[in-house]
Length: 96
Image 1: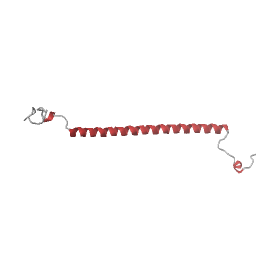
Image 2: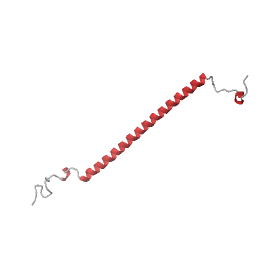
Image 3: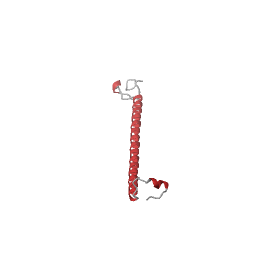
Image 4: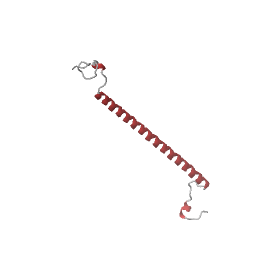
């Protein structure tokens, strides 16, 4: 018994081969390519997020270092310390 499709299989209409659509292999290859692209984009996103976090941490560190330097400068000014210590002061001798 021959079906309506001319013996090509159940329910298949007479459609030329060029218009039959995608095969299972083509769909699987397309899905694999899509998966690789999604993985690559995810990797780029994670790398940029990590880079942004590193930049923020470095900015916080620089801000803390600047604050510490300002605090030391202020304390040294208040103590009237300019980095010049008499030679006798190192030996414990009284200064004139």
